[in-house]
Image (cartoon, rainbow, N blue to C red; front, side, top):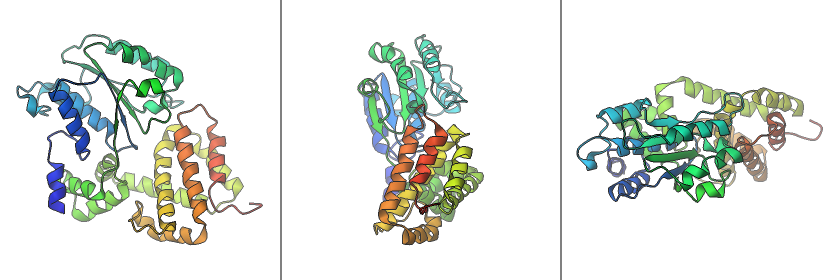
Length: 343
């Protein structure tokens, strides 16, 4: 089994762990001269969306003589793209106050993208968190999507297509990245990152198939501490009354950008509760919390767990909208179990 996994992991030389079908799809497009002007890469946070976009950008602009060897990872272009400092690579930034991708930012990136490359074959723009762009900001891309410069490529990164305009998705090549099997995450951490087997096994189970998260947690132990604190906060909320939950909602609403990873994690927790309530035999994503998960399952109805999961997912999907964060979080907490009449 392990040999099969490793064999699958080494079918390409791109700096991407897993997602081999996506790499092969892009390799074929490159080999056949059928590169699209816009790609929309969707999938959960830290699953490898931007990593895939960067790897494709490296392949497109690599200067190695052998096209089959691109990206080589050694030429000036590959190294600059990997370091995030290539002059022909553009990256969008969210507004630090609102967490939105503003129309002014989109227009600024588009103006730079229209210029001829300084030294590469293509100028490439990567729009991180494109789901944070509201309707007008998304509309600002349409002219480029409809009449793209021959030297320009767009990569849009988002968790899903739900909040994106149909005119955006219809003009882009959509690539859906799925969570990786825990075995692939584990073996990648051991083979490529030098992780000890026990450590790799723990991180693979906790990652929920998100290779990016697993690598960061391996390199920075503080991430596991932050994760533990976030789950403690959720479990504490389930024992609080309405007033305390509303106080928590007020505190959380002060950091919109911090809500994304927090709610992503809480979503995996509620998914574990639902699966355990339904008797699924799968190992919980939050396996280190199994005792707490099973205790919660014994005290609530399966429908309550599903309602909490749906409330968390709705809150997460709505973060990109212009909404009253405190009020939205209060509504979510009201849908969490543990509130009896009068609390």
